Amino acid sequence: MTDTDQARIDGLVKANPVLLFMKGSPLFPQCGFSSRAVAILNHLDVAFESVDVLQDQGVRQGIKAYSDWPTIPQLYVNGEFVGGSDIMMEMYESGELAELLQPVNAASIS
Image (cartoon, rainbow, N blue to C red; front, side):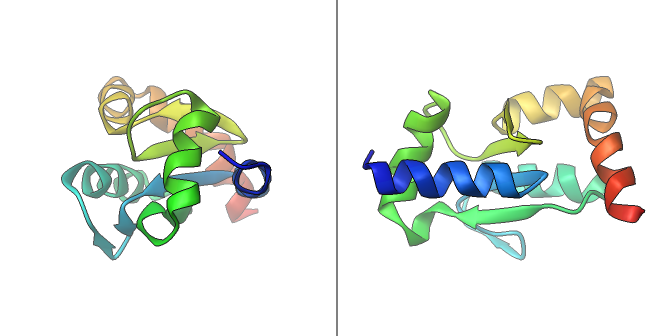
């Protein structure tokens, strides 16, 4: 990962309270895992930004190094890496994801 890619990814992560690096867009996910991640966030009614890693190879490879996580999608909340779609699903089912996102959701409403 280049320093430019690192700085860009770091800036995106820090600038967006809820950020999903995914394949495709929320309206047109390009893989089942990204589709599931979007569905979970939509079901929790949380505002989030997304980055389509298919549009930039530097980001596509760089995000894996940034998080030390080999797969996409990747969810970040308040600058912290949460996980991929499997972890999101486990956290959703346990109620932990809704709890994590509640302060972010409340802040966006205020």
